[in-house]
Image (cartoon, rainbow, N blue to C red; front, top):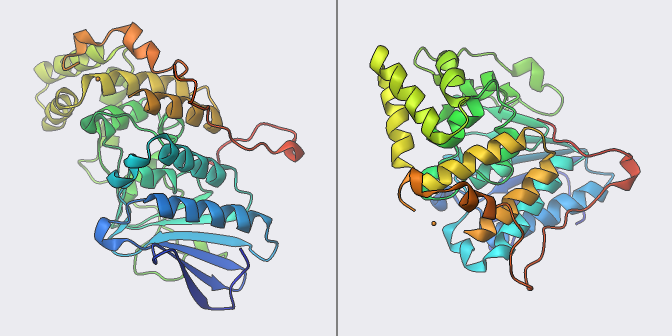
Length: 336
């Protein structure tokens, strides 16, 4: 994809993705504000095309991604699931391409960022949160698990905070994202000069609010370090019986409201993700999402969890193939 004239704007495929060019900077704007910039199959393909093209373009030095309206990206468009495995394959490939991108890339995460939106932002080099940022991985309440590389970036949060975020579907604001490492910088959303080499000059170090879950890391590490979901819930209930706490009660309720299968698969996914590369995490997640059911925790046996990590028993199914960089002479790692 050739660079556009200085200061110009181009649109691709029904204006779902806008591309602005300013010198050597390319700005990609997710443009489905009425759908909270949910990723459609078209958007994913166009983002893939842009990232692959810019990687080869020596005239492109900086990539900026942002969303139009009150959301960065609320996740994958539910309508996209009609494309089945192809939708997930392209989405995971996009996540990987972003993770290994050698160009400087900035994600301006203003507003809602959830699910698939985290995959196109948190794998980037610079992740800028604001006072309007709302982050969550709510998949366990929807009967799924944190995917798009969630087993990679959540497993690398302090202590067992990643288990808490994944299982409880907990929300985080911009300050919390910065404090736990999901974001690399924090700026106010009305500051127009946060990139182009001066990002550190304008970034701030806000403290999490008094009621932030990060102020309960001691409880989180004690409870969410347990081996099983049942033991995690039991540990939280023991804490609640000794010291009444609205946050603990709400966390217990969130876990009990979530899908039992999702909870167990998510826990194992996060635990195994700690020792895997971003590419390996995406491989596992793609295999798991293609398997995709019991209403009670005790009905989800270890054998059932194991099947989500096995190959798909279908001769037409293909593994997720990710490109390699032989010139690097080393394993590719995420920039988180």
